[in-house]
Length: 278
Picture 1 (spheres, one colour):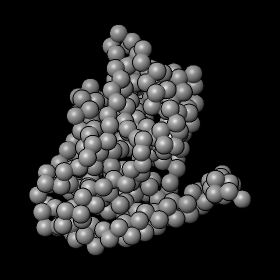
Picture 2 (cartoon, helix red, strand yellow):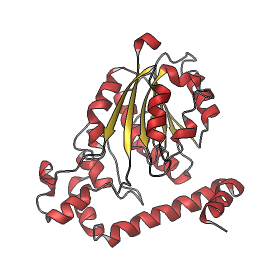
Picture 3 (cartoon, one colour):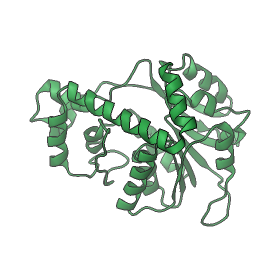
Picture 4 (cartoon, rainbow, N blue to C red):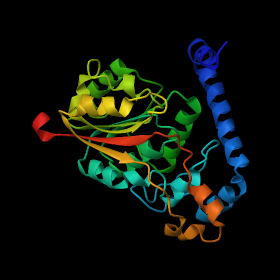
């Protein structure tokens, strides 16, 4: 049986226990990759020196302890993680969405970070990994943010239902939504306007994975081009000299600590709703 077949058995037939096993296994593989590159010790030393607070960027000040499998944890603490997106994030936050859906929320870096910046917003943290759901909830408690709701998983129809769901605290609707998506190629099926037409009224930040789904970036640009301002953000190289906390490490190790272990081709789309399309 293929690896994909085994994964489907664990995810679909075994339910939450199967997903938990796959999540545990994936996190172990991530830890092994960090070890193979000789970064486990340096990452632990730097994390001990930094503490648990994010130093820079839009989520500066967020308490973010490390969980097993988070091999880019120190990059997050430094404020280097996905720093290409910082200007776009500030623009999206300034539009004051009252509903945020973070699909592929992981341990809560974006879900909790956005909840801190948008205290009036209702935030859905969507992830099929039960370990990630627990970690995200713990991060929310640590940062004393409310309004975050865990969702195990969504397809396009489920996304539409969530976009139409009223605020559980007030019973009112959501005139502006922000959808943040990182789901390893599933963005092609998830962001289906025939099944989720409410996306036309939302702003979106989407990590695209052309290495997993060839042409997905082009298709999403076309799909949203008439109703949104479309900006593609490319992966940019990291400069360790911008982070004084790395000065004591060798250039190779410092660069490794900033590495986000990305595949190519990969980029992000910032899709900002045009007011004329409202």
